[in-house]
Amino acid sequence: MRSPAALARAEWGPLRSTVRTTLVTRKWRAVPLTLGAVLLTALFQYAQNQPWGYQFVQDVGSVRADDPLWLSLVRTPLSLFVPALDLPVWGALAQILIVFGVAEICLGRWTTLTLGYAATLAGTLYARVGIALGPDGPLGLTASDARIVDTGPSAAVVGLAVYVCWRHRARWTASLVVAVMVAEAVMRPNLAGKEHLAAIAAVLLAGAVLLAGAALPARSALRLRGAARHRVVERSGSGVPPMRSWKPRPIRAQRRSWR
Image 1 (cartoon, helix red, strand yellow):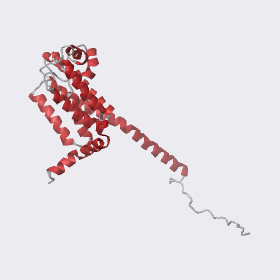
Image 2 (spheres, one colour; image 1 turned 180 degrees about the vertical axis):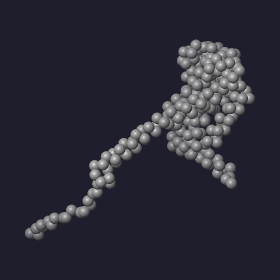
Image 3 (cartoon, one colour; image 1 turned 90 degrees about the horizontal axis):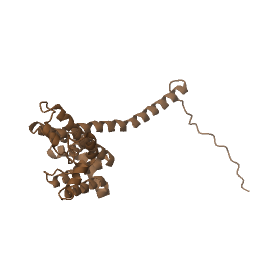
Image 4 (cartoon, one colour; image 1 turned 45 degrees about the vertical axis):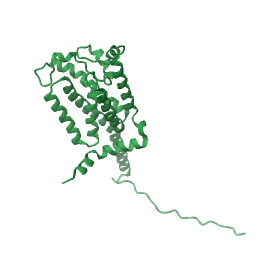
């Protein structure tokens, strides 16, 4: 039976090694997106708690399901960095710093940004679908959820955490996160819990598409090498590659003069 330390190394070893090596060699230069996201979230938190900034933050990053769709789509990118007013801001900052930082190191800046936005957008669009389904179904929402301000990084954080664990073979951790989100949605069937499930589904789907796209060039190169090898065999006429002669060429005697 394996010890807890061995199980932990098997689960988190590759992920820990990648993060530690990158931070040791590049330090904070490795996570510019994460640092910018933390700073932007802190600025939004400060602004929305000021009399002069509350309405501005609402106008640029507040999303509700009863808003026009085009307006929600415009506000969705910045809504990711607007912390919820009824939750402590340090929780949102810690989530972004840890999860976004690990994702940026392991996946890259643009992949992290793409998957984070996909998770947030999935939650925003799901809210409209859930309200249309109504409260009777397991995926439905009540009409009052349409007036809830839907902001914060939680959907992106959950989606990125599951995807990073899945990519780096921390499968038990990814399964645990999914199980906790499912339990939350069952025990507390509210907008946030069901949006987290939508975010996980969207990130896994988007990640599968990215992986498939990355695998296409490698497969094309293998097919090209196989076709080239087949043409060489056909030109040989015997079904085997042509033989090469490695007999050394005779060295001509050189006349030397000793005069």
